[in-house]
Image (tube, rainbow, N blue to C red; front, side):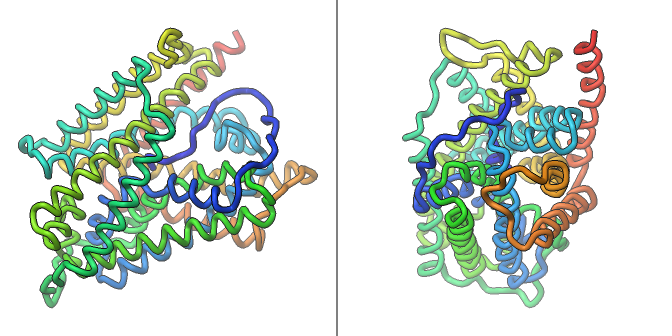
Length: 449
């Protein structure tokens, strides 16, 4: 969810398309880089904790790849038909009107993006704590420090360039491949109890964590307008990239299961470090913890940078939030957007600390809101075909209407699961979005006055 679409909430019309420049290989590399993030080093433990068997773990990760591919096909049609910097905001505005689009913007500012920032901060904290523990609240302390420092750097105009961010992606994949190879070759199989000690199992909760790790293909679909020969290469790039990601995710979970067993996975707070500790001893745990901490910082920095800019754009578009639209000209940064974003993220760190399961609390907080707007995006594909039947659609989702119906069904199930099987944090996220309704009507009154 740290990898959701970068939206620009503007009233501008469709952006003019440039000549397509991305080859099939370029598109595959971009999608893989977007999707694989720090979350994959945290979620396997939570998937195992909600699975009744090793087979269920593997099946969940396989189904995650299939669901992601189906969803990516739906987003590819929306992105190529309505190429717009607003992404989801634009589709929802066209299909449902300005009110729903406003709530999406509000949700992104207060729940989705800030929740993703807090989530990544907890990943960094969990693995930094493997290197230098700071007591009972070590992960939270590291998370607060990371958010504060990266926000200060970004406000000052000190930002990671494209090349550095690409290196973070290389480090992420290097970490994955290291765990897979060493875990499969060197980790001794853990003795398995006759009955795995799993406190509870929930297929819905397991899939929430799986699809969190696959998150980002919705953003990847936005490059579909830039792909050469789109009718042929969009589906190919999605199939190849999600196939590669699915294979990596399956292999890393097989390595975890072989080295730690289902119970060992479920009980781990830093699963990659635990596996490397078993394979190579303490030096292995230190090495992988360093790699993953760096990866988490890269993802965290990117989320902070893009989130503040969407807050700035929201402030430019909605007069009630004009204070977010202040730009620090000297540094070229949206200072107020950064500060508001950091304040909300730090409050979420506090909430995660109080529940004593920070990463999981942030997944709970963001999941219902995320899947609600994903469901509306799927429905918007049907509505826009009805409302705008003569629009040129460079890419049409195959097997319509079955494919988008499947996507909507999955989104509906995961929305249900995120409300039923998650904790108090999920209810908090829903309440925060509901608090946007008074601001919506206040904004409309101001607009008409």
